[in-house]
Amino acid sequence: MIYQNTQAYAAQLDEKDELRKFRQQFLIPRHHGADAVYLCGNSLGLQPRAAKQYIQTQLNAWEDNAVEGWFMGNDPWLSYHKQLIPTLAGILGANAAEVTVMNSLTVNLHLLLVSFYKPTTKRYKILMEAGAFPSDQYAIESQVKFHGFKQEDAVIEVAPREGELTLRTEDILKQIEANADELALVMFSGINYYTGQFFDVDAITKAAHQAGAYAGFDLAHAAGNVPLQLHQWGADFASWCSYKYMNSGPGGISGAFVHEKHHTDATLNRFAGWWGYRLDKRFLMAPGFQPEVGAEGWNVSTAPILLLALHKASLDIFEQAGGLQMLRAKSEALTGYLEFLIHDINQRVGYEAYRIITPKNKNERGCQLSVVCTSHAKATFNYLADNGVIGDWREPDVIRLSPVPLYNTFTDVHLAAERLFEALTAIK
Ligand SMILES: *Cc1c(COP(=O)(O)O)cnc(C)c1O
Image (cartoon, rainbow, N blue to C red; front, side, top):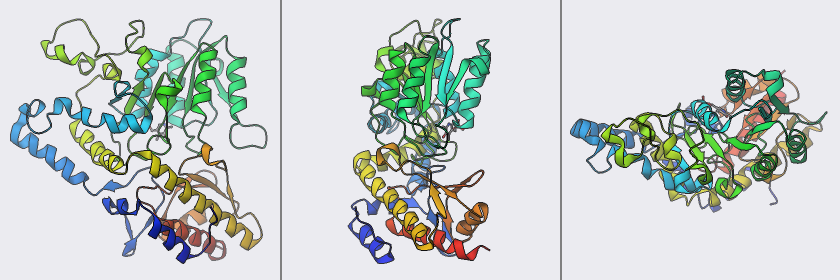
């Protein structure tokens, strides 16, 4: 795509954008009476305009039916979650039975590790990316300790090469192979939160299996952002959150994927609760846990209907947009435009004012670009915020900017780049 750095050109791209009508379905934050430029969907997706209605409908059902709401009304709560599964399964590239909605992300990682981290004295190590999201690091650290191992010994972190900021797939695969005898699990994010690098989930999964280890993924920054094929790739398990690219509200409900091949494996441990009990017999309240077959069998507690309603409000928009295929094409164009404009700024000023650390290859990234400000980083971030551009800040010098295809425009991207350019002369 040959881009131009003019507002008119950006407006023209917006005009041609077949997905532009979806922006109206979201509440865009305001800045001095105008729409802010919100490029922070990687951290908290925007509120669907219909979210209040979805919540109100369930409040009404509670009002009208009280406890009977579990079994009666237009969408009885007992099966409410089922309405979300087809869209979610599409987003993840999974079969319906492989996907469930429950809890929050870090909680789900722990529950899944109960099943898929089964260390033995010989095979007990977990291989992960260096610089994983802190919650994932803490989860892994506490899990290996729980099993009586030392973190320094049991956790292998794959780091970028000297002078590089992102990982090479070949290096990840080599490390998996080199540790094959001792690996119990390979646990990676789909997209690294800091660099925006989209890992080769397929290749990592195959290498883990080759080594005799399970492969699990934290898809917090990948779900709803990039196309995934979890079933086909053979990933053993995954979890994600719904409040980033899936716009389902702060602390919104998470979900989990468990590959079909494990659904009837009775040797897997799990921490059980009644909501994972087979539905046809759940209310017999009998002793002896019998799981529902499929990912649902990993559920523990009563479904939080209000959180599910928020999740559905957003998933219904994904459904209207036809899933991720067109969204991904627009996403590549939006992020490509931001990349072009940042390079253009550097060219105009004659030095590298902004350095993009996210991979150039569009197959190795999603919406997000992580931008190092080579001087006055924090002041630059504040300048953006003061001028209506909402990104997010990561120590020591990185601004993450994520144009999201459901609600961002090419004009948003152009405005953000204008502010980045101005910041270079405005900040002394
Ligand atoms: C956002 C994010 C989390 C957050 O986990 P919660 O349990 O929802 O607080 C965890 N891991 C990764 C990789 C994330 O990006």
